[in-house]
Image (tube, rainbow, N blue to C red; front, side, top):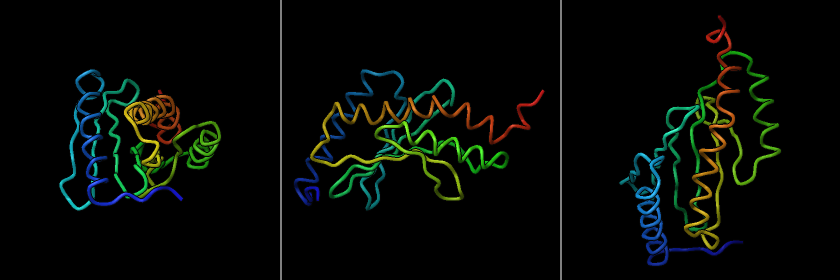
Length: 153
């Protein structure tokens, strides 16, 4: 089982993440904004500029053992649902560090997590980059399947 962080130790990790994200934003024009959730949950929203999908927002949620990350890929597929689901299941077999999942309202998400003892600036950069890269790679295929009638000429 991974190490359990509370109180001051968790606060230090939170401060590190704030610092790493601020540095990423200053060095990378792809990062458009970084926001924080002011509620009970420690969460950041990293808004990224994409090419295939105009914007991708990665949600980072700090827990006592892990940093969970997720991004919304697309809404529930009204067409070719079986093909869309097959595509994401096949993609999961080749992905590292992230996986497709079905979330609220049957929307498609990309999710993952990293244990806090393995978290550093390089790993956080990898997490955000992997989320953006994976969305950019699969979004065009999935959206054309899920909304095929809108792409017909």
